[in-house]
Length: 229
Image 1: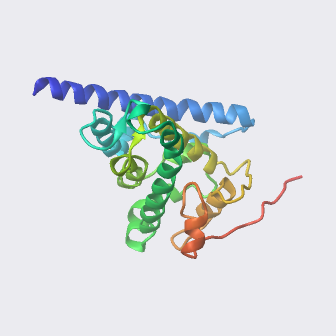
Image 2: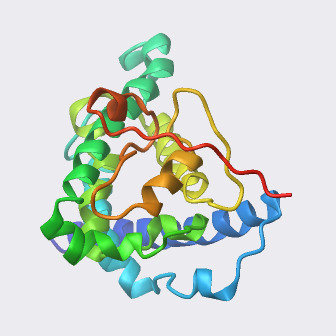
């Protein structure tokens, strides 16, 4: 019993510290690569480590249970399925993840939840890459379920899964960059997501990766990028 407890604490802290430093350094490198100057006030509300653990604790419990194969369908050997399945499984993973995120995110915009919880994230009307993980601790725990639960319902190779998780975080940095916007065909790009941040409770563009869910449910809004000269 003590051994299992120590194992859980080890993995929990490993995920927490790794996630926190990945968030910090990917944002630093993202700004440097894109030559973005971020003012101090843009990073003032970056959570400290205790707030970070509180806001992501549910995710780390899921990660522990999945990684130790107590739940889910994580596999280590390609031969357990096939090379073809292993290569295409991330696409299915992202589609499931995107639908779950759309539902959870749109639910967060119900007036009662938005005004008390989700508004914390929407204080960033002109978000930066740092804004991606700044939110109410309940909000972040609930929405993070979309990034881990797909492994519970579908098999995926452990290295593919790790790559998907890292890409999810990097995509979040991109989505919240309101200073260097781009437009991508069929994808929920940062111009779409910055439109989402511009509006408040009654909103649009709830998806994370693709824009088809917003189009299907009538919540898609495209805005032309204004070029600054």
